[in-house]
Amino acid sequence: MMAESLRRAADDTGGDQTRVIREATGLWTVETASWHYRNAPMTVAEFLRIAPPRHLVTSSTGGEQPQALVSRAARAIAAGDHDIVLITGGETFRSMRSAGSTGVGLPWTEQSDSVPAAETEPDPHADASHACELAVGAVLPTDYYPLFENALRGASGRTIAEHQSVLGTLWHNFSSVAQSNPHAWNPIDASAHQIATVGVDNRMISFPYTKLLNSNIWVDMAAAVILCSVEKARSLGIPVDRWVFPIASAQSHDHWFVTERDELHRSDAIELNGRSVLETAAIDIDDVDHIDLYSCFPSAVQVAANALGLPLLDPDRPLTVTGGLTFGGGPGNNYGTHALAAMTETLRKEPGSVGLVTSNGMFLTKHAVALYSTTPPRTEFRVTSPQPGIDAGPRRVPAEYYSGTAQLETFTVRHDKRGAAERAIIVGRTADGARTWSRSTDQDLMAALETEDLLGHSMRVADGHVEEISAVSREGLF
Image (cartoon, rainbow, N blue to C red):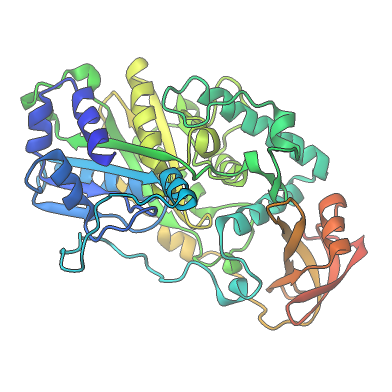
């Protein structure tokens, strides 16, 4: 699939397809989660029937990695270190699940330990979660993003019903875009009510997210982008009307562990990334014509829209060009490549327009924001990082092994495959501002969390369990 996506991308250039592939000096792949390769670029080269280019790279884990690869390639080409860089990624979670359920073996490439590993850049931290988060079972994106969502509700002042209505409308808008995307995996016509309401085919996953408010990872999808210099594009006979330029990019991460972040409804990294790319390009957010915000879950979209100063439900400027990871498809780390391919097509149809793409990895942890246009940048392409400013920002202390009273900051309730409430993850703040992580399996408490507006209320915590949530709200949290 990755090799085929590169063939199609080469054909899409309108230039000499054979030369585009064979003269590449770099072949870089987004890390594949559904199948293990020691050196995916080498295998892709074999399927392309070319000798491996001199520089083979595989990304680390994270949804921001496609943009990180593109930015790295653009800088390398500008520096004269590369002529053409082929970037691709793909996932086959659907086939893997089907094979597992039927017992069918998959005759796919398996690389031995003797195959030299592709170059990669590791993350600054090996662990994605803090020990106090792991202690209450916070492990998966479906544990964390609902926590951000309920924190957003608390900050907005909405009731549960009002907020659920907003989520349904937001995701309905995304489904509408997917219907016009010929590459969308699940381009269904889903109403706001259908999306936000529990039903036979739309069970609750982790409150407040129904199935249709989650990323759809069960896809077989691949995408590719090709970067080269203007000089090389002319040499390859690529028509000017196929060109799209990277204008500026910024990359950074929020405080690595969710526990340490000051507020769970916002992102300093996205805000400062956005400010940096707009300053580099000397434009305002209102000058951006097309947008794709990373959309694994609605909270990711809302946090990014708030950070960038974008209206959430503007029908004239949707926040996706693909339909998002629920309807367009959520292929592991590689959604960003699909977003960039779709943005390329969108910008070509409207020459001179500007597109903005965001991406994030892990638990709203790692971020990239980039601008693109068919009009070349006014200055040399730059990748900036506002990391020092983020690192200097306020950082909360985890209250490990805490017993006492705390204020309920956010929560989620995980449901089993039958739709029954299974376990609550509850986050609170102590009087001195430290953050607590607790859990509960009490059915009455979980039901109250999902039906009553308890955010900001006082609760009693003992040894990692919530014993009681007060009916009286304390002021000052939201």
